[in-house]
Amino acid sequence: MNDIPMILAQKQTTPVPVQVAPKPPATPLAPVAAPPPPPPPQTAATVGTKGNIGELPFNGFDLGVIAGITILVALIALIPKGLITRHLVSHRATPSAARLAAWSAWFFVVVTAAFVLTGALGHLWTVIVFTVAGGALSLLLLVATIVFFSRAQHTHR
Image (cartoon, rainbow, N blue to C red):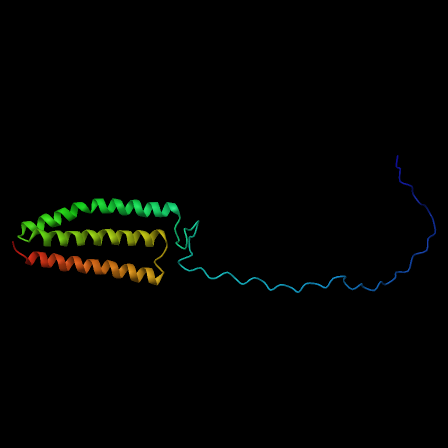
């Protein structure tokens, strides 16, 4: 049934435990490496990074969306540009001054749309450099549009 031999009722002396001195290691232990530094805290430029292109917080799809919507806005903004030119010319403004006011309004709309899209898709609203520079550029184009529009109204053919 069982192939293991059994030792029954055999008197054995219990061996006395012998303390063995620890051996020194054959090779010296390597010094314990310092733990790696903690990762830098996430800033707005690193939030939402999923396959960045260079240092930009966008992937290729985000750039395509930004470009596509900006082009769509640029094409749609041509309609009010023509209406502004026609309005100013009908109010006796010179055609060159009317075109200048209309083009500045077009640039304001397109640049502001691109700025808003880039900030929204790239999560860049907390990056001060982006917000200040983009806001300043949009404000500058708005002021230029107002100035050119008012000057065009004061020119007469």
